[in-house]
Image (cartoon, rainbow, N blue to C red; front, side, top):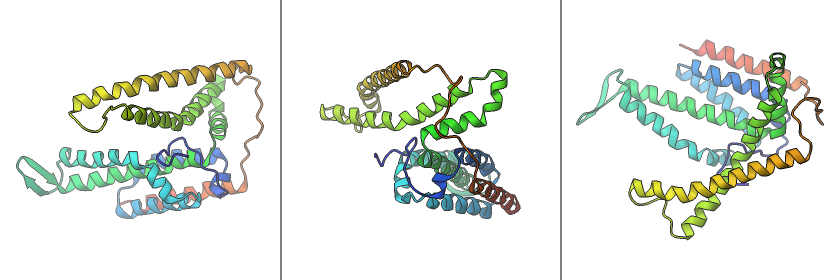
Length: 265
């Protein structure tokens, strides 16, 4: 298991988060993504952080492993914060150097948006860490089942999303192997002018795309050889069923959202 890759990776465990119905987890994460934008005070952010950390530790997955997996995201979080420093012109001027002015509102808004981004990535990553691709496929298909009445290809959409999540770690590992192979042949990705580094990426992208198309073709041939004809008439080995723990979890999350609105200013 590659510790540098988090998205799309499943980590087996015996936690109650793993045992939850995948539909419960998807609905909880979906509404968390929406309601995290309603936080507008220190207490509301602290409350959402407490909820996110509680769920994270409840998965029984090493927290250091999750933080390492979020390493590629830190660049985007820091970039988001710095962008607000240069763009936002609200509040009083705190720092003035040459033509650069940093306002108090820029720091507050930058921290808030960056922290929202971190919470979103952390919580959404828990879905793939605690749920197998097959469970995600079945859950999405079940939640979107009413759309079948308007001839929407629910099963095909769920299958595509599941395959995409499944192949993210595979492509990342393939990228790492190719980059090491190219570096051993003298290709430098880290130093030199920006133009040279962009040109050095080409020997990395070409074999990566070739490998991705090859894997896609092999998967299509394997599905065709096994008689795959879409979702019509297909049965499932494990039927999804809401248990008492799922109802309790949804009620608990509803309480968390009510407290969030109470803590807003």
